[in-house]
Image (cartoon, rainbow, N blue to C red; front, top):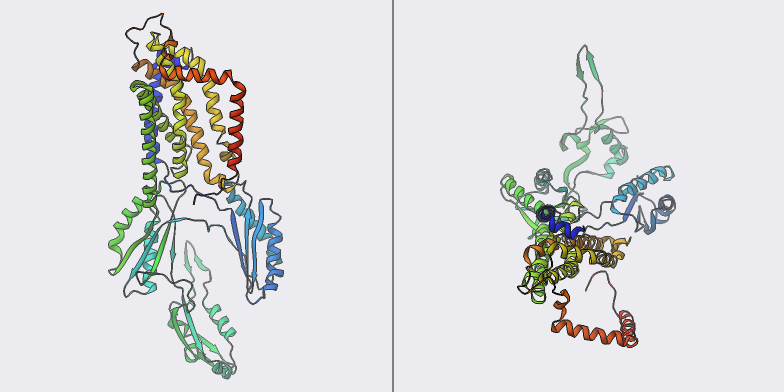
Length: 554
């Protein structure tokens, strides 16, 4: 007893498989991550080191050279992509080998930090500790502008901090960054002539302020079970307190800092970034989603939370959406889903035209079950729904029905000729299951180069192979299990069918006779047939040389 015969005689197992695939497919579609494009790992890291006052040559000799030497000891490094030594700063970009996956990079980044930590003793005294940047590949799917007439940057920053604390709690949100915030500094305007008269220097005043504005642990007094914590004052609580600092001049006279300097708190004069929205100064909030999340669902939760806290924003401030990736993803996925539904409909219509209504509906139903099962397994293995995985489903549609067509056609011919359904299932599945499995594996192997590729193109397109692998294997499973059951239920013997009816009579129609005639001629003139095949292959190989290559279409 093979799978086909078993499914006809014991339909409960096959119906259970159908229910699991349909329910799992619906659940998987609602839960699985939805993106516009697949996630993509940027396999680079930047190492930035400040060396104030040094020339470009000094930066290279004393900083960049030692960092490059340490990094080149790592076997994961592909090459040092860029090394720039400019006055006061070293900027080094490193690219790692393509064979490492996203899961490998936390350990690689840790090793980079260890290598840098081990060579810190080689850096000159004036060089700052290297900064390792490994998160510049973050994608901020939602960009919001915060603006308001009559509000200072400090007011906007306070409100942005409040919004950040509230929105980062939304499920699926990984990180929020604030852009356009202006750093506040305290300026001391001091006359150099006045400093010379008092015998003071800027360095001395800086040392005094630095020693004054410090938080230290002065200990505590313990008496029995009680203690008194000692907290000495000294740090500056406001700008005005800076002016009350006493400075000793060269003649030992104590003077207040405010008597020799103008002290003011303002925004940094050399601004790093200015953001305007609708002609008004603004701050931005960039919101990054967690990996594998349903971006559309996270976007809905985020919009709901923003609406809830909008009443807590000061009057006159407003939040405006600059970019909304969840909306773009929803439109993109919806467009691809429409294409997928249209492709399924076209396949079913073609089946109805050439296979008949009953066989066409059976194969169409098996196709839908296969697609549902594919969505279920995609969700189980964390494969997101994006343009590559959806494209793979569309590509595979034509191949998904091949196995079911062979089984359904064989079952239909035998049942209509009067053969028992269980016997027909045993005969058809027994003769074709191994050959169909071999053909399915060959179809999968045709896309294996994409799945096994270790470069960046392979990483971006890998879900194409995985989805085709899952869907084609499931198409074989449903073909040998579900298709015989449906054929037994819905295909009936013809009225004139008898036990002595030859199943081969079904192949006596005009189309089959025409095909048989062409096949006989091709086999009779086998030399000419092979010459034509080889010639077409050579022409195809030659023509392929004129096909332009590219990662993305124009």
